[in-house]
Image 1 (cartoon, rainbow, N blue to C red):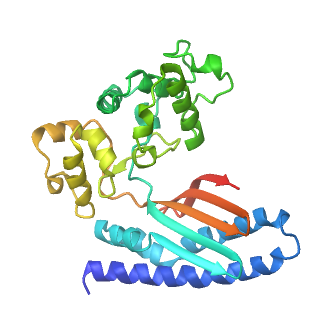
Image 2 (image 1 turned 30 degrees about the vertical axis):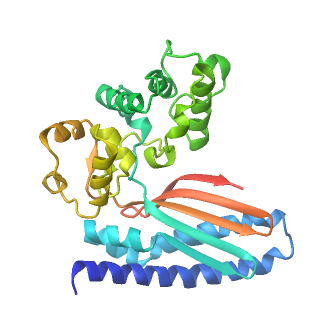
Image 3 (image 1 turned 135 degrees about the vertical axis):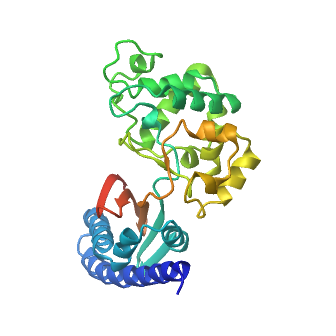
Length: 301
C-alpha cells in the first residue's frame, strides 16, 4: 500500500474511533443533563472537550502521523477529517479540524526578544495598501504588541486604557483594534478583508506558516502577488516538500525569505460546536500532534 493509501486508512480509522469514543461519552453526559438543565450545559461542554483531547492523545492514528513525518499523510488526514458531526438524542456536536499553521500570526511581527521584524511589517503594510487600507493600521497592531513602549503610534490606549498590550490575545482583541481603526479613520475597507483566512492568533512568536495549507490571502500577503497567482499557489498545497517544489520565481523567493515558513507543521486547529435547544458552546484550541498537547484554548458559551 502506498503512502497516500496508508494515510487515508489512518484517517478512516481515526474518524471511526472518535465517533465511537465521543458517542459513548456524550451518552452519559446527555443522561445527566436532564437533572440540571442550564447549569450542567457548561459541564457537558467541558466533558466533551476533555474526551476529544484524551482521544487525540491516545489515538494510534495520531501516533502514526507523528512518527511518519509525512507531508502527504498529514495533508490527507486534514483534508479527509475536516468535519465530523455527532448527534446523541438532543445534544448535537460537530468537530472541525484544519491546520493551525495555514495563516499568518500577527504576533510574529515581533520576534521572541520583542524586536520588531521590519521586513514582515513592510510586507503587511504593502498588502494593506493594496486593499486601500492606511499603513497606520499596521502601526496600531504594533502598539498592541509593545508592552515596554513609552511612545505609541496611535491613541488607542487613551480611548481603551485597559486594553491588553503585550500581544494580540484573541479574535475579540483584534475586533477591538479593527473597530478603533474604522472609527478613528472613518475607513470601512477593513470589512473587505477576511481576517479569518489571513490571521491566526497565537501568543507564540515562533510559529511558522505551513505552505501546504497557506490560504490565498496569506500567499498574496507574503509574496505580494495578485489573487490569481495566490489561488494557484494555494491549490498546490499538499505537494510542497521543499522550496524547489513550490516553483517560485526569483522575486517571489526573495519575498518569501522575509517569513518563517515550513512544509510540515503537525499542529491542528480544532473547533468544537455543541448545541442543545437554545444553548450552544463553541470551543477552539490548537493540538500539537508531536507533543500530544492542547493549547491556546478559547470558549464561547
